[in-house]
Length: 223
Image (cartoon, rainbow, N blue to C red; front, side, top):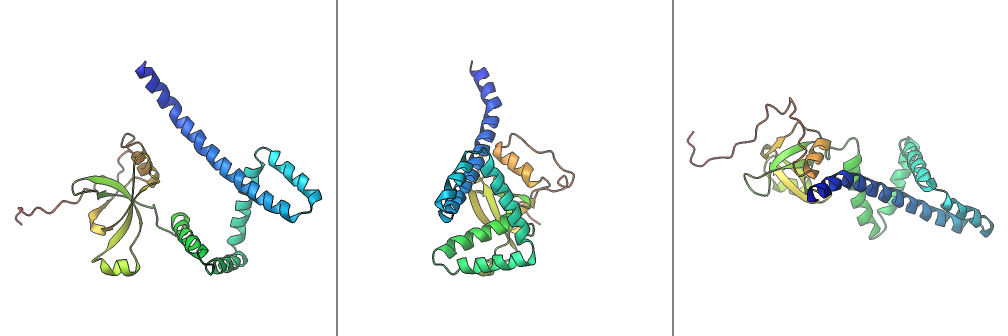
């Protein structure tokens, strides 16, 4: 019985989690559509509010409207006129107390993670963590800057070390560049490896076949 229960669980669990994530995304988009609709109803006269309320009952309309809105927004902000409006909007929000701290932080993180010119999560590496001789997979998120970079000797990289099986939480490290070992696997393959707790190992790539782990310094070794 135990064997059959585990086999059934392993069959249905990936599908159940996938459906749960999709339902969460759909619920979030429908919630955003509902908020926009409520604001719109407050602007229109009472005679038109009843017709707008009927839009809530149409299945999938909220998701469709939000996807179209994001596409149109992307088209708008990629031209010169749209970029000027984005700069004005950013300037306005960065002058509002409390709001500027939250907005600026979220914008910097989102620009780093999702911008095509950024280098976040573009490279998977091996690093010794949490102690010497213990290796884990990490992702390069950039290089230290400002006062931190001035205090660090030599070249360092910023790393994100995800936890398993939930990679959305993890640790932020700044490590010397020569202490990390680049991997030939893609970021997607590395994430699968982490989420599966090492069960789903990606195939060894040709570029990584000649890459070896850095040797630790042996105080008893004579040159």
